[in-house]
Length: 276
Image 1 (cartoon, rainbow, N blue to C red):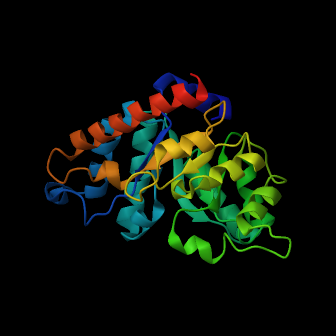
Image 2 (tube, rainbow, N blue to C red):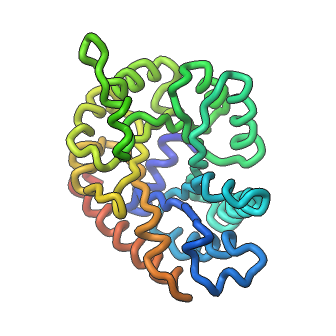
Image 3 (cartoon, one colour):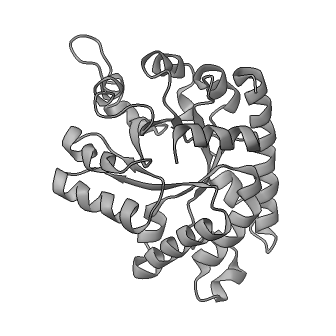
């Protein structure tokens, strides 16, 4: 999927919502535990309920790998289900990979050749040769971790070199030599507020994957005011606030309601800041 195709979907749905499928078997409704594959059954219901209001789904690999083979099979089936029932959705494997070149080649093969997702999150710490193997796939995306929303991000991302440049800015600056805005996005946490202004000065045209709205307290309005560009340029992720909105047998309906609320807010933001 190209950047323009993604933007067209955003315009069509009046939404830049990404639903995070952080499916914890300890949190899903009890009645699903009787099924052969509770994680997959939960995901199917969430996907069908929220697909009208979002443009992307983001399974977080940790929640599947923690269940061993069963979890990985649930992940595979989830991807296949989205592809079959909702083929217009942009699929992000939130895997946070990034290793020496030949290892990254295997990770890239896993997610792009085998799983056929649209994008994968990648950690930049090991540098260019750990990222490049993901960039040889046309119309597939690397989403590079740059400025995250967790407290521990202050340990490294905000530290400055002798010239006063924070590490996250160096990541943005150097990585632009590896790929352009047609193939690389960046993770920028919603809790970073006005730092979106600084980010946009450096990468005005790139899409940003923005976690932290909802359960983590990030402001959608602030993200849009400082982070939106003329092509929207945002995929705002919400996980827990949507998928765990209700723990009863009506969990999917409640998820749909929460997704629709966010979509309506996003429509207003698009009209206000993107002039759609």
